[in-house]
Length: 188
Image 1 (tube, one colour):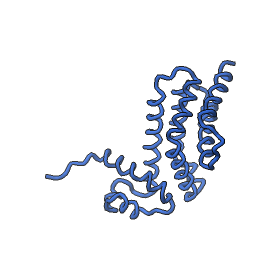
Image 2 (cartoon, one colour):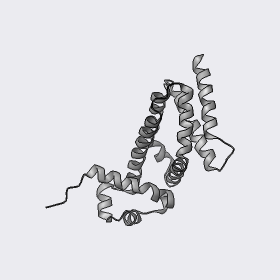
Image 3 (cartoon, one colour):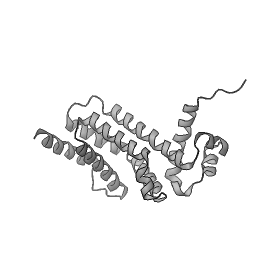
Image 4 (cartoon, helix red, strand yellow):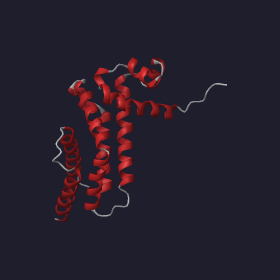
């Protein structure tokens, strides 16, 4: 009797294993053959699920952005005030700092190996950013798109500061300050 495979679940398993591979070797330095070897599958199996390395990467972006959002919303569930939520974001970022730094490095490495115009046109990155902005709407109750993008950019900046090794930047303190600033701004 043939083995029954849940294709969606198997695809997710393959994608989850790719994160560390891209983090360790970089998008541009790894081939589909190397990915298949690392995942211990045939290249045919890998191409069955992902027609190209770029398609694999784009599916990874979609899966991880949704996972990030779900995890953050779950972890911050029950926090009431904007200041509590902002402080919670800081703690969440600090707790998952290594992951977010690796994720940032992976994205930068991918960008380096793409045509800038094509990268900007990519729907997957636009959708991921829109999903992150929507999560900010949902979590913080911020309905102003420009303000949500500011908060998203602020969070990216904190991650970059940690990547650069700036230990003087306290992520929780900065997020607490963000909460105070947002509260004051939104009260006006």
